[in-house]
Image (cartoon, rainbow, N blue to C red; front, side, top):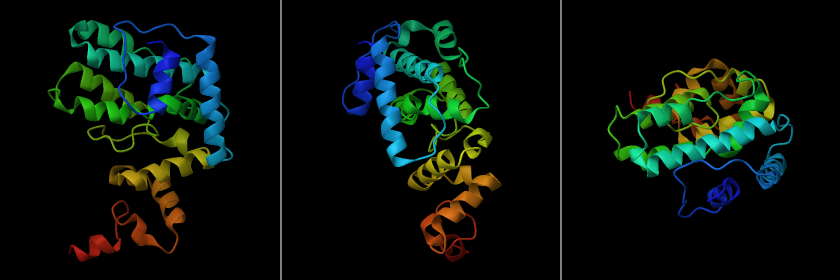
Length: 209
């Protein structure tokens, strides 16, 4: 399966087939990523610019992660070689986090598939390293520890995207960041009960005392 076909299969949930080796990007992949970008901008005006290098890197890494999950015989060295390759764009830039997320948002689904893997398995550890590095994409994942959401918070539309996911997945760990907690409070306004599973001091928490 080529990367462009892989990306299409993620958009239309179903069985994803992957090769043992990750295919090289093609011009069609860039066109498909631009289409995803256009869809996102309809929902969240004001998003950072698309960084195509980061978006292609993300697609390649997620494909590799799926391949390593499907072909467990590939081994520890292959996991490190394919999943620890650094992103070509700055990890401090909001545009990088946005562009990586176009594909990497599917990482938590892969981790759910891999939940039967032993806790200390190198593949699961690598997936968690990726999740910790890209907080926008890993909302809902457990075992990541503290994440640095500063690049996400630097863009208003991206922060709103992040808040929406935190509320959807009830990921209380992300609200430990004061900037994120403030954005959640602003999003729910007087309807603080909507964030009962996320923010401290909500009605649910008071009722439990």
